Image (tube, rainbow, N blue to C red; front, side, top):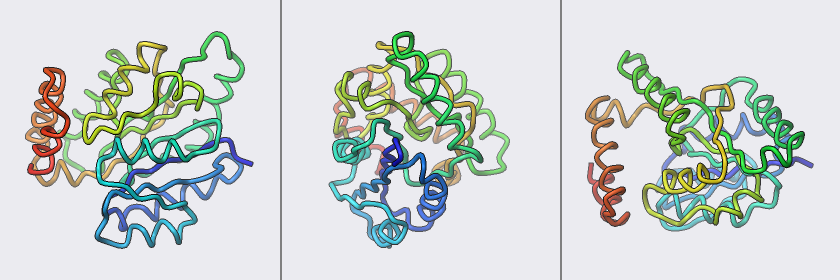
Length: 234
């Protein structure tokens, strides 16, 4: 039986979710279960999840709420938290298995370690390569990977830091801040491909600046509910 529970937050991802589920299905020895937590989709996401062999859960929209619910229902010793619009890299299972093996070989030296994928954004715009580079530097030096990059961690570490908070926005930043106080977050050494529709819709630099503005507002203490309104109005 697999040792990994994969939790996927979705909202209207019926066009992208099949590829992700097919990739996960290729590693039955690693993946014990896939939990798709849907936040109010109006397309065929729920049907796709069921046909793809995932367990479907539902809750109000908001990735923090969705991922928190999925993690609470997960049964494996390891968790992989993902967004529904990503594609995993080739040999993704090998990268995860190596990280788990390293953690098991050093249970006392690295009990609080978590891992993330590097970021690749789908699209030919050269500006996206700069975003990817900036994200790599942010992830490594500031220990602040984005939720888009996925997060691999043991169940015991997840529980030790208090788990995912059911925030409507900034749930990823809030969690990795707590994780980085316990131990170092490390790259899995492979890039996860994220759908580039947000950057295409608003433009690369408008999207980047708007996201930075939301993070600054959150650090100043603005309520996550207000940030959520600004994010989706955008």
